Image 1: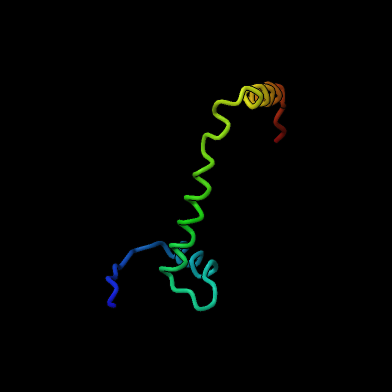
Image 2: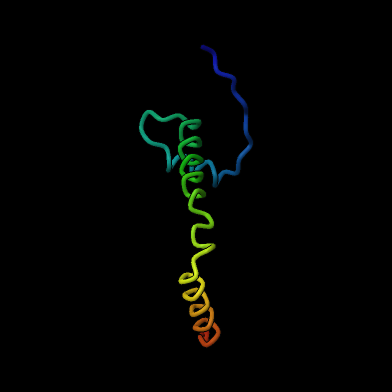
Length: 73
């Protein structure tokens, strides 16, 4: 079976990150696919607290504490 291929232009820094993420015997396509699959799993949790009243209270408290925090330079 012949697979279609595409050429992509990426920044040198991105290429270096792909090399770091690459496991033994893994192609760059495999790396990209693995990383993208991980993102979709994380996205499945998006909005999980959107209707949680207790979370709303915690978030409100966090915002109040942040307002009172003094940043030091």
